[in-house]
Length: 159
Ligand code: HEM
Image (cartoon, rainbow, N blue to C red):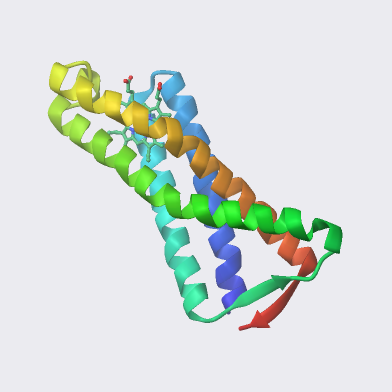
């Protein structure tokens, strides 16, 4: 059961990374409506990931690395950076969403984002996403790598 939850957690975080890439692609092509939808989907999937991950943690499921010793340091460096940036990703995503939401409220609709009150908020949105997007992508990609490494070199400790 915990193993299945773990698999779904990885699937949701990878899908959220893909939705994020689509969202960036859409805004580069000036398609704001599609950008908003893709980013809300990415955020929803990331929330689902968090719920699944915390459920798995609550069940006590844990795997430890038992792979080659020469890869141990690299693996733990990857794992620690992944955990720290995953925790950081939550406030970064909330900051980006909050400014987009406030901006949309001030603009009235996505065609009006250059109205002065909205412009200020979307400039803040841009400042937040400069960090949010790379951190989110790093977390999604490294999460997938860790899952693959533990699939090959992991040993269940609990669960
Ligand atoms: C956490 C989720 C989100 C992320 C990671 C994100 C990411 C981005 C990125 C990378 C850009 C391009 C910034 C640039 O050109 O420098 C952008 C711009 C933009 N985003 Fe988002 N976005 C998110 C959510 C939203 C939502 C929900 C809305 C809808 C209200 C939205 C509306 C916009 C608009 C209108 C722009 C263009 C701003 C401008 O031209 O100044 N974003 N966003």
